[in-house]
Image (tube, rainbow, N blue to C red; front, side, top):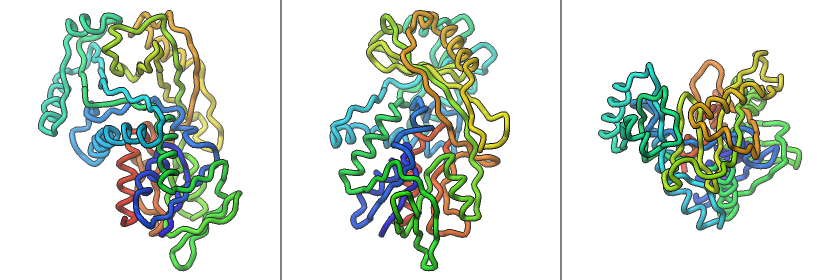
Length: 362
């Protein structure tokens, strides 16, 4: 059986890797650019599973599945490919500010304990002792999730590609898809810049590029770009205790330790003012500056940071329906959508891959 996947961000790469161990399955991935570009390249890889405020439901199950799967995948990928993948296993510290109701977090901690996950409430005294670099002026406490993770999305995606190649997956990069042609026998033919590809199943995992492909098939899925900017900085020395470096997040600003006294700071959330996904979004420097100032207010030592790199990418957000979209395309039983993950593509990629495998029936 032949499966074609369009798109090789972290979602497409995870699907290819998941399917690559199925005997007799021929998997081909087509990507119009190089892998891990756009939304994957812009992501910070902060994996909020247990610390998500969702109490139950499919989205929570997907999140927790992703955490568990990365605990297995990352060490295996490193061994199998020889690639190093930054994987912070020190958890996530989520700061709570004046006006927040800590009882909500205490209830969540109780629910998570019943679900087999641990959340710890931290008071100001604990924070002052263990995280002396933080400005606690407006902070009333924190919730610490030791089971959550952070992973380098680009390194992860490239390792998934390398492992998929080792398992026999064919990857065609710099290869735009020009036409999708469903055949009378339920197979699909992809026309690409490099020629035709025949498949029994097609998986559309192309992020914001999914809209154009589905429009060709008279089943347009409206996915809008939401721009995100982030920066990598280097400090004169580590922030706080070098042995205690979880991801710290507060008021939607993330401080991600990278080792070597380096940190990622992000990310902005920038919507198009035009309402037209065809009009290219451009990063707003003022919004990135606002995120930086929020980060400095949270951690004053960051004012001494040296900016090493700043970048942006476009997250795929479904219009008028929840993210993500993982289902057959209406009217096309052998064309699957695995797209529109918005801000959680990295976290939800493993569960997406498992769902696609189930839908394909292997």
